[in-house]
Each structure stands twice: as structure tokens, then as C-alpha cells.
Length: 401
Image 1 (cartoon, rainbow, N blue to C red):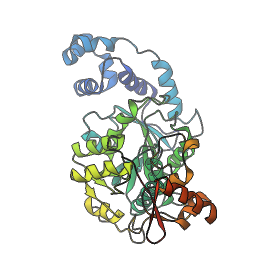
Image 2 (cartoon, rainbow, N blue to C red):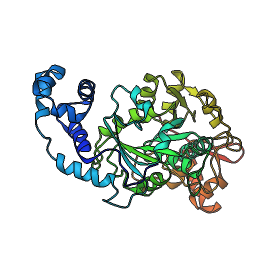
Image 3 (cartoon, one colour):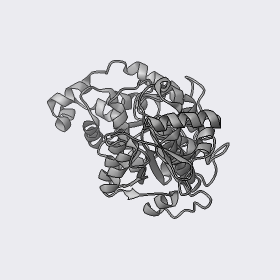
């Protein structure tokens, strides 16, 4: 793969692509019509106004005659980033255009493939079989463990895990895929692709900066947005179409009935990709989206082998059964359970408990509480109707409709 200093675009070409991207009133559909007619952005802007009007009509073509505000700065910033001169790069950098042979062919199935993709990391991952793993930002501890275990097993089997770098399930999926690599890329491992809803110089959430750097070194970061694009609400659903299109199937781990994960699943289905879901407790709000997908025909999966079978990927997963035996590990990092309140207002025991049955020993490992203190707190929660005591000295959080 090319190093930081090796680029395919030259500066004028990059500026022309950015001008096309930034021109007000010229969206992706119009841009593709212009490219089909003229062949390149440079040719579009070199063409006469009459020729452009013949393609787009008078109103839409008029904006192409003016230089967008901020173009010079954006072109220089992008050029310096591409050459690795703005900061130390964690991985090789590229800006892929629709005309670039490295542009992922799978994205061309989308109704509005991005004109440009900013990329940092290993572009070879765009040519590997991929599965999207998505889910709730307010994941349970068990949900995060499931995402991490499935991602690790799939990556070890040579499948690339695609997700969106969000809190909860996304972050756990990226982490699990990276765990399969150890200290560096392995010949038979798939690694992970993170599709951002911001520019690559504006990692969101900020707490995932270190994770993003790991992905740039051992996987791939992708964004269709200009480098300094901050987090904007409308951009996160927009990036979901890229997550869905890059993947042969989308696995939903946990999701509420109305969530961005279900948008990704719908987009995957519209593209003819498979939709898969992990079932959960009937008491868990985060399971209701998965159950709704299963009712609509999504594949119910219990192990990574189920995913590979459904997607017809003939690769072994020996020794890594995904969630077949319950992937929660002693000492696993607790996730925020289905509670959108600030962390300081949530109960740490409920956060660690999740909605699947768990032993007091496992809870003690997750929370760091001793047997006496944890037992007293569990009794309080049981009396409050928040927790149920099950046979076999197991405990389960109770959801509320």
C-alpha cells in the first residue's frame, strides 16, 4: 500500500473534486450526471455554461460558475493532510474519488455513493468480505460483550467488521475486531473499518480518539465529509448507508425500536444485503429492535458461525464460537445499561447487570464490589422491583415498558 507521501490525485485535481463537492445546489445526483457527461471535474468547470445547462438546466448549472466559499483553504488543508504534513499519521492516507480504481465497488450499489472518501489506514480491507455490526449507544454489559465476541470471531475468520465508531455496540465491535490482530495485522484476520459521521480530523466522540488511532494503524477509517466537519445530527444517519453498502450483511446486536441501527438494517435490506439480529431478553428495551427485525424476517443468530453460514462465507471459526457459550468474561469492562441518564446518575450495579441472567460472582468481577456490599445492594434492588433473583443464584435486571 502506498505510504503517506504517495498520492494519486495532484493538487489541481483534488481542488476540482472539492469544488464539485462544495458547490451549493449541486448534490450527488447532479454531480454524477455532470461526471457522466464531461468525464472529470476539471472538464465540468472548463465546459461552457451552455454545455452545463444542457445537462442540468439553467438553475442548477448557474452555481457552477462561482467558486465556493472556503475552497482554497479546504483544498490546501486536504492536500497537506493527504501528504501527512498536518500531523503524524497513524496510517497511510488517501482521498478516493469516484474515478479512483481503489474506490470500493460495493458503494456503487448505493443510490447516492459519495463523490469523495477520506481514508486513513489499510485500503486493502475494502476488498475483503465484510459484515456490519451495529447497535445501541446505550448498550448493556452483555450486549457489548456479545458485539466484542462476535467481532473478534469474525475477524479471526478473515471477515472485516464495519461499524460507525459510536459509543456502545459500535466501539465494542471495533475493539473485538482489533483484539483478533494482537499487536499488528495478521495474514488471515479481517480487522475493522470505522465509517465516521464527522471529518477525520474531528473524531467523535472525543473519548474514542485512542480507538480511532488504533483503527488507523490496524484497520481503516473512512469519511465522506470534509476533514474539519464537526458532529452534525443529520450526518450520522447519512453515514449509515456507507456502513450498510460496504457489508455483505448487517448484524444488529442491541437496538431500540426506533434507532439508527434499524435505519442501517433497512438500508442493508434495500440494497439486497442480509440482515441478522441477536435475540435478547423480553424485558430489555434494547432487545425490542432486534426482535422486531426477526419478526420481519431477519436471521436470528446465536454464534459467529451462524453469520458466516447465512452470508455463505466458507471460513472456519474453530475456537471462536462468538456468543455460543455467552461471551461475557470475568472482569469484562461494564457498559452503560439501557439508561440514557448521565453516568453519575446511574446505578453501577444495574449498569453492570444488563438484562441477561448473571451470577453474583460475575457481577462482583464487573463492579469491583465485595460479596457483602454487592449482596446488600442486590437485595435493595430486588425489593425495589429492579432486579429478579433466579434459580441457581442468578440475577436479572427487569425492564420497564
